[in-house]
Image 1: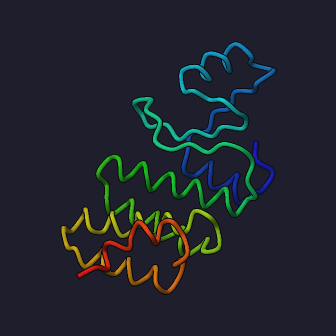
Image 2: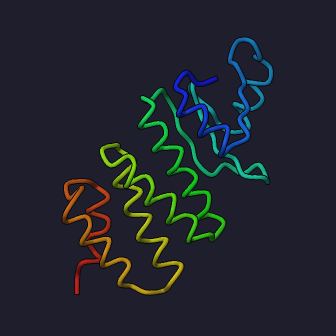
Length: 151
């Protein structure tokens, strides 16, 4: 389904992939498109065991950006389950392995939030603020984290 072997392997390891083709499976596409409000193709949905959407990607991305977004989605799904340690691990993996993607600043932000939620220790937020001063300081995510640097 995915031409890039790294992407294909990651998806096979982490997901139960399902594909609905807009033309070849028009009825299923229409039904699922309505159910999940899919307005454009490709739309990639991370859906949990109960059928709840946990993350959405729309449009094509290069392999590195796509992998970063998938990992970000896994982090957001773990966060929604209150699995904060798992969420932080996924978010930190995005920052470590895909630092130059659009997903990295968002992942850094949520890594700090996940660490705080797991520990209740506000120093996790202050550490994240300081990390934004070193990298991604001109992003909207740095602006969102700026309140954590105020004494």
